[in-house]
Length: 414
Ligand SMILES: [Mg+2]
Image (tube, rainbow, N blue to C red):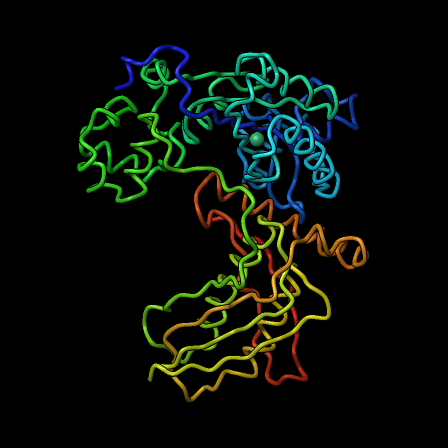
């Protein structure tokens, strides 16, 4: 363990900045009269809680909870519908402030980002602690929301550090303090250790992060595979999960999988395609990318496949638009007499959302609104595990191309 290094040993300096109850804080910026009273933000369809203030959380209200259940717990709270357009604006503002502190920034989600602060102490003439406080104060002053900042030598430690003193806190974990820091955390605080992994670790007598790093790497590898060894190295202060900076544009992005058993059932295939489309649209929205072309393919039992493609009038990452095209293509491709074993969707002719914005503003605005839904679903799933929320397979299969009926999918909680 890193006990021989001096307290200021910074092989790397990564900051994780995380806005506190972001959606609720955004509302308080324009509704200051609500400050100090509990506030819950509702999903697009007003069905469930997507964010809440700390006092609502203390009353037992959880993200993803149906609104009627929350109202039973806290009838006196204010319940507001989400306005993602507004949250998006404040998010942009926050990231533009963060960018001042380092050009090497990764936007992780609408309210979280990483900064590579390596070498910036000389520039600012301050410690990392001083820089972290400056960031926190600048965001508060200019956006009106609070953020928590963690700085450490690896990505995972920085993320855990930002969680440590929430809200409005700064936590600095230099190399030599890793052990002391981990002693005050629990397994569930490790980013990437969900309930299943935690149970697995506990079965092997690993009950806390200190047990985790004191275990042989081979044991972690056996239990959790490569994801586990990456975490093990990161918690030892060895950076193996760098930041995603300046990514080159992908030529294509695909979401495909085998359907398990061979099937001719149209509903089954449609539900797989819905899942792939949701994941593809979420990935595009998160990376702020648009696609001009979408391909659907169905792999037949005999190892050959059929595919169809749609070229959109303008580049999009709109779930509904993509999904509608997928349904139409599925209608063209599907043959009840065939047996299928895999399916997938592929986005091509990819461009950056920002660059398409000016001339397509009218369309983009409508698309942005629907991208919000995906951001909500994604942020809940990132927090509570994949597929906590997903798009329901609410499609009736069209009987012919001319009779395509499009039904907006609803969100279902697991
Ligand atoms: Mg946050």
